Length: 484
Ligand code: NAD
Image (cartoon, rainbow, N blue to C red; front, side, top):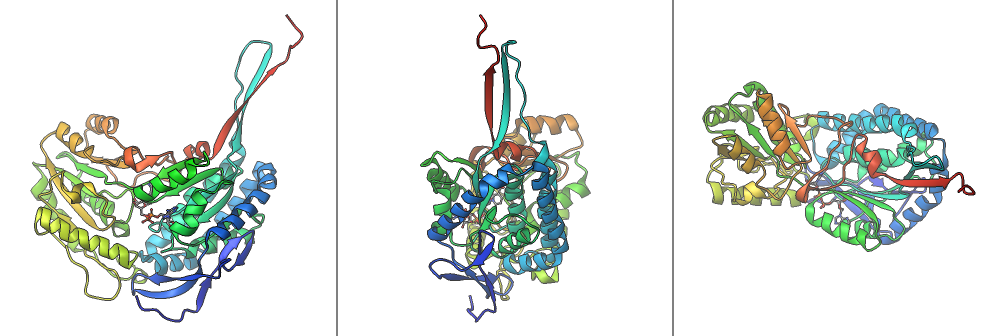
């Protein structure tokens, strides 16, 4: 990475104010299309997390006591503001993360949509009454957890900010966000926009910094009531261990190695387009990427021939030029993926297409497909988090399902078939938190999302996130205490 004097600076946002890190540290954030630092960011540490948690705690009583429709109005105003700032935020996201600018624009829109969706829910979260005998009145109340922490990964920084933070605030929680050190910039900007639309000070705090410094303190903070973590399995385990020390509510959105199954009766144009999107969108850096393609042996050769044509047509280049695929996020991720390309060659031989990095500045690799993959190989089992597809064949439905479930992960499973009986049998038996039928990345902010097995536990998105961010209190009154 070439160091340079950077003009842009991003601070922490605590208690409604931008401020430098307590210990004065800063780190550089890098444009992955060039490998060059473009901004300096305040390096929050444990001391800053303590300040942010204290500010959030102070803000909690008024925020949770505010009329829910008023909370909803403020979040709706933030959604509008995000849409007004879509071009600026998308440009920042593309420079920080590398993704094509049209994807970054979509991510800003999705973030706005999360705030809009949960704004509408703010005044619709209520309990129920439970019939006992005539002598009792029993009802439940849905209460916020309190001070919540959101630890965000680098692959979809703006999108996951909305996904994790909007339901927390809508249900009366306050938030302390730790964005990923690779992509901290949009989180700081969104917090500033939230202040602009009138979110009270301390309700939304953003502390950029490193995982082992700011992140670890936040996960294990004794005054945090709920932790939402999105990231890798090893970090998720550390975060859960930190949280459990304080018996803090935690939920984990972790990685995946999701199977994309194609049967001979699938609508082929759609299955091919969907397969390309599944693994090459965001350069494969998506938790729910379809990184294992399972093809019925009858159609395998013909499908792959057409898939290669589609992949060879993909353009790869800087996100600002809006190619089909941008660079990987960082030098570290570039090294990881290029190592997996070597592992793939050792295990499965020469790739059908791709397999190399691009000879240019920045962290670019080719979209790559390995065939002849056995399910026990590392490229079939480990999350590469890059544009690398492992292809396997199956003979029948039972074998497809066995291969699909032959992984430690369980985030997503997809199937392409026009036989709806088969599709729903697959949906029933797939070990995954969500199943896509005839389209990858199906669903929206309304649809619950999360994993089983090592992909985590707990659900975000949709009404499920309202459950995740609230706890139920039961109130039981004897209204006839003197009677016999
Ligand atoms: P990561 O686990 O390295 O980092 C995620 C976040 O955790 C970052 O903010 C990081 O600073 C922080 N962190 C690191 N160490 C920490 C610690 N000891 N304590 C507390 N926080 C710490 O993950 P990543 O590389 O940024 O993201 C890629 C991973 O995220 C992939 O495995 C991907 O599948 C997963 N992911 C999952 C989802 C989902 O919804 N299930 C969505 C996106 C990404």
